[in-house]
Image 1 (cartoon, one colour):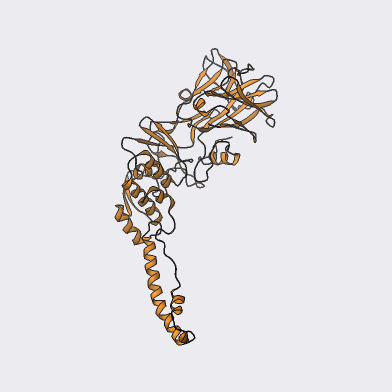
Image 2 (cartoon, rainbow, N blue to C red):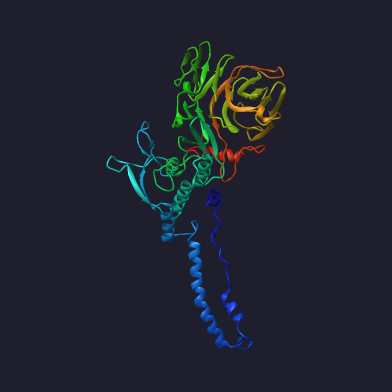
Amino acid sequence: MSLDDLKSYPEELNPVQARDYTTEAKGLVTQQFKLAEVFNKYVQVMVDNKTELLEVIDDLMQDRSLETAVGAQLDIIGRIVGQERQVLGLTLTEYFGFDTALGSQTYGTLDDSTVGGFWRSLSDPEFENQDLDDNEYRLIIKMKIIRNSSNGNIDSFLQAAKILYNVDTLLYEEFGGTVVIGIGRQFNTGSVLVPGLGESALGVRYLPIPFGVKIEYQDPLTFYANFLTQTYQQFIFGSGLGLTTQTLNQMFTFTRPYTDTYFDINGDEQTASTNEPRFGHDELTQEPLGLCINGPNEVLTHTWGFEANESQGTFNISITHDNPSETEVVFIAEGVGIKIILFREDTYWKVRTEWGVAESYEAIITQATSDSIVANISYTVAGVYFSIEDENRFASIVVANEQVNIRNFDMRIGGSFTTNVGDVYEHFNGKITEFSHFNPYTGSNERIVNNDIPITTEEYETIVTELDEPIVT
């Protein structure tokens, strides 16, 4: 059986042609008996017994197939491939505990069973055996068949992962001896097979991992910074840590070669030292304002490594503009041969993309006249898609794809900028509330940034609400 067979699973792997044996038998009766009621009933009684036996044989043929077998028949298939129904020694990796302990989770909630870890005491076993129902057992048998027949290459692993996680598309990165995969959604911390056993742990146990290769599992969210709560997370490739809490200084470089003032949570004016970020509060209400950026030399930067997907991704930025009289650059993502710029001019927000020396695209977002906006910027090898205040723009990249590298972005918020046609944008004057980066939504529903098809508003909301809580404020 090939991997393609395992992926498709036609309902009848042993097709049987249905036949009406009673009609066939009556068709063999000579003319003189065709109207003989007693003889016809005798023929029907004889054929009905044979038909019942043939139906049992037909069912037996069908129940020998992996997709249709149940109970004892499925047990036989499992034993043939070397996989018993009882899975032994599964590790409970997700539990309620301290945040520094490996595998520990938070409290759960009454409203959402997917949040929080299972309670485990010191007296509870670290390992347990699990009897699988037919659907669970069938999936594990498929994985066992793949492992038995795999040639150990990465293609076999990726095809098997699609079956295990029930997706059509995988995000895939190579990082030295590490392969990072994403399935277009969060990996569940509790799998359908064993409560407390995460999907990634399920993959480690049952996927045909190539020898000498380390596999890591990536959620769509690869980078998140909330400047109101000062919460920062980044997906760390090649470390086994996944989406990891970090400090501002670990994720960003902040520069300002002078001191500056801000109001603290008590409404008192404070002075930030050189290169110290200012997290301001409203002087009267003491509400947090986020990261304050004000001045040509006050700049927040980040250099993307493998967090940015090779061909596509989505930046999300939530900002407030404080100086509408200036033409000010807000956000720049700059790769090889391409720049993506978000700026404010007069009373409008605008977006601009540049390729090479002279080619560019600029669009005014007519509906976005407010000072505070949430901007979604999705990029592909074919173009850049902007969504601001439910008004959308798409800019096709007009140079050859091999001349544009949208990996390894240098990202910058603040500072001045001169376009490739000589227009000058002054420094940003405002506040950064939130910034994040997503790999695009992929999977069985085929929601993917691909060529000229951008992520829609509904699809973007699907991404962010798949987290424990929406991150867009």
